[in-house]
Image (cartoon, rainbow, N blue to C red; front, side, top):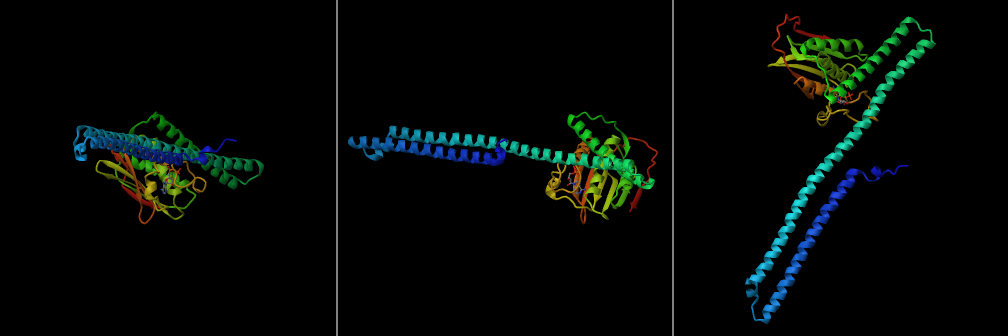
Length: 351
Ligand code: ADP
């Protein structure tokens, strides 16, 4: 059995103890040197005074002598050296400690993320596969009526879609890591992308949500259709995932200056201010994998932000009122194109 070294001596604790020990010994050695130098100075000056007394020279005369001044200067020089070297040592120690500390914290966070990712990805792969397997076994073993069989097959189709979505996200993340993304930039109608994703979720969402769509007029961006679909569908999937039955989910598109804005909002559980700064991190998921109820891998928002940045855009997250979350994406608009605008301004609410 491997000795549980890291559990018994957690790296961060060992590091803090080490830094505290180095600081304490630095202080101790400096004080020791200063005291020794002072003692040596006092010894030398006492001898000088005794010798001077024999020669009948007053103690004031000794203190004004060149020899005394030299010894005094030497003490001051030695003390300056101790303070100077101590300060440089302290500076180097702080820089080194800071680097090691942030490296250790990053390693710990990475380990936690890796563990969370492995747990979540195995769960994400296993549950649809088990359910598809069960469906196929049921269909083979039993004589089901066509209606029931269709229901089961539809569920399996949803599972395969989930698997395909997961694999797409993983592939996209790998591509973005390797910076080998082949985008086919075209002038895209933002509304058509949002509508396509919305229609998809309206059809497949088994949990009842109120869905709201507010689409602006003539909104085009230069971009890759697949990438934009990934952005919107990841945000919409999260809006559904992190809200409850009866909550409102919405998408809004509009223009602000020369920017096209896409807003996906919900009235779900919301995100704390602290978490808002972290959720775009790769594999980052709020909470703990052992206790979390929702499915996911922590890749969705990472991909969304990377893709938005690749389109020279920005994404911000804010609180919805009275509760929930709003994700607002800002993309440069494709002003130059001439189009027979097939898009009409629309505003619709589907329940
Ligand atoms: P996940 O696969 O966990 O959904 P994401 O990268 O898509 O990963 O999201 C990261 C985290 O951000 C999620 O674990 C969730 O806690 C939080 N989050 C994302 N979208 C929302 C939302 N609309 N409402 C509340 N929390 C959200």
